Length: 280
Image 1 (cartoon, rainbow, N blue to C red):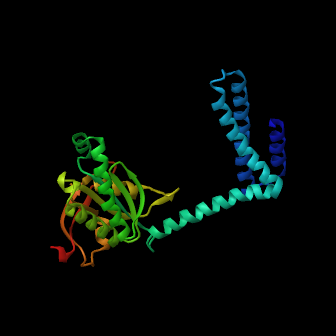
Image 2: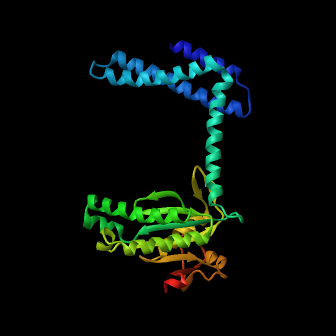
């Protein structure tokens, strides 16, 4: 069977054209070659191993054979173009979904508003509560936070331990989500209040680089640094974000501070969000 797969690989190599098709085909070929090498190794392991090891090796080899067989069947039934086209279709669909997510978070001026949060003193809290109780606390914290994101069109990019990275299209939505989250955490009558959970939130806006569902660049790093400067229960925003809302009367910024952010050469002005006027 190995010889047949090698012939199949050679046939594909000699048939596929160049450009994008060739790139995808080359990836397919390399994967096939790796599969063949794995099959050979598995065959030798099965032949030389004691009986107690053989079943696991056979199972792995059988899985590899199935992958090659499925590709061979697709090639036999639909031809070389179908085999390559399926990869292009998968890639196109992935790009379409990724672009749609980026567009939902990007304002008309090309900026994205980034929201970072974490629990103040989470390590100490974990130690005092123990892992099991801390996980339960995190579950409640996540529930409150995610509800605020959903209410204000936030896209969760990733979570890390007790923190969130979220992107918004509009700065106002990000601040509304931040205030709602803080209010929800304070109003909780269960674990969060019992253990005085305090969350630090930082918000910043700017141009970013999007890749594979994640966001990168100077402005992402700055947003994370803004959150690190916040105290538990605070919502801090960058001066750039504050200036975009200079004519807005929806929010009150009651404190400004100058901070030297790690990795940045010049100090940044950071503003504390006190809330909406009706909340004061």
